[in-house]
Amino acid sequence: MARTTKAAAPPPRRSRTRWWTALIAFALCAAAAGGFAVYRATSAGAADRPVTTDEAARLALSRLHLYQASPVGVVLTADEGGGVRIRVEGVVDYRTHRGVGRYRSTGAGDGALDHGLIIWDTDGLGLAPEPADDRSPYWQQAEHVPRAGWSPRGYTADPLDAGLQLLTQVGADRPDNPLLLAQSGARWLGRDRIDGRDFDRFAGPRAQGAAPDGNRSPLTYWVDGDGTLGRLTMRMPGLGTPTAMDFSGRNADAKLPEAPWLTD
Image: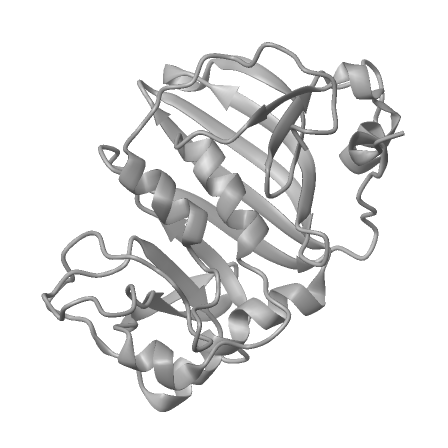
């Protein structure tokens, strides 16, 4: 995205650790043997346990199911610190690793700070004002924004950027290896009901070769009985509230715009 639109001065962003940048760069990419490459973070609770064979199989299918359902409806919520929260409602096509949506940022007390259109891919994101009095879906609005109307930038390690970058990677065109998931520290954490559906909550597997020291991944997955991913959260260093991504399944009406990525 950032390479194919007109350059514009990005808003200032707070930098975070190189460790977190590396985590996002490799999170959810398949390891050489076919498993997840997910990294260690906080200590595991006493009530969790290793995943069963069936649970590992469902977790292994969750990324493929997202890919097959594309374009998938998503809602990302990120706390940026200082009372600032950003909410992105959008769709992601895991065949092209592109997303489009609208964003809204609020401050302390839910006071509105900014809003507009947003597009993103594996390289970065772009922001544009929402057209006035245009009630068409945001993917259609984005198609009508000229290239010069987007303000692009590459990713930082801030919660919004980390979440968007992770969203482009979470779908995959093949299932992961359930045996490797189980061997790499995936944990069952509990069971929750979300929007009338039952989900098992899992801590993701850890980096290959990590010592069994009681730490677990910063990524938590909610997967139903069919292997469908309903929610994914990511804990960020120094922030008490994790970045959350909710998946609502296939949005058959959505058509991702081509204009923001055209090079001619």
